[in-house]
Amino acid sequence: MIALGLLLIAMGAALVFGSLLARHLPAVGELHPLLFVSVKVGDVTVGTSPLLIVVLLALYLILMRW
Image (cartoon, rainbow, N blue to C red):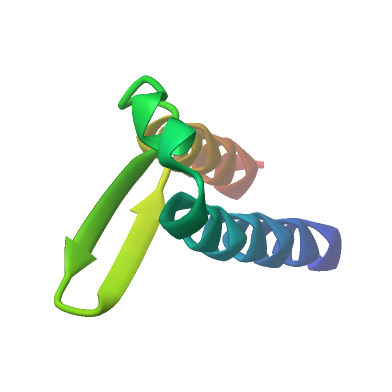
């Protein structure tokens, strides 16, 4: 379970850096909405991947049954 926790932390860090990339690379906005979604609220830009969230949620639910 520790490895899973570290993996989830790494995925979260990747999403944070992906959001930072969205500010500087206009091509990121051209990605399919399932791969990356960026929302800007005031001066804060938040980016996430709906597909990654669904995959990680499914993985979590599978591991919780074992």
